Amino acid sequence: MAANDSRRRDAGAAAVEFAGVLPIALFVIFLAFQAYTSFTTVSRVENIARTGAREAAQHYDPSLCVEYANRVRPYWLNDYKIDGGRTEVAGSDAVYCHVEAELPLLFKGVPLHHTVNRTVTMPLG
Image (cartoon, rainbow, N blue to C red; front, side, top):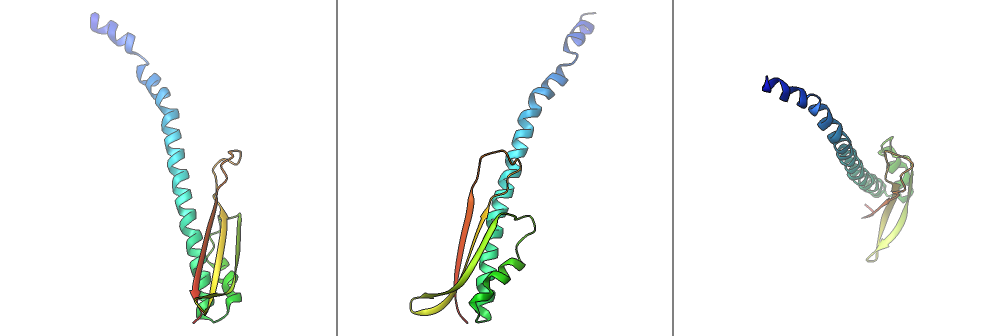
C-alpha cells in the first residue's frame, strides 16, 4: 500500500517540471535562431559588397556596382542601402561597393537595432 501512496503524491510531477522548463527552452531556441539570423545577415552583406565590387571592376564600370550587388541580395533583407563608384587606392583607379543593412529581428517591438556595414574596394581590371 505504501508504494501506491507514493505514486499518487508524484502524479503530475512530470507536467510541472515540463511547464517549468518550457519557457527556458523556448528562450534558448529564440536566442539561437536570432544568433543564426545575425551571422547570416553579416555574411550576406559581405557577399553583396564583394560581388558588386568584383563585377564592376571586371567590367571596368564602377556604376555597375549597385546593379550587381542588388542581383545577389537575398529577398529577406529589407532594410538596406547600397552605393558604390570610382575611387583611388595608392594612385590606381579602383571601385568600391558599400552595403549597409539592418539586422532583422524576430519581434519588431524589440528595440535592438544594429546596422551591419561592409565596404569592399577592388582595383579596376
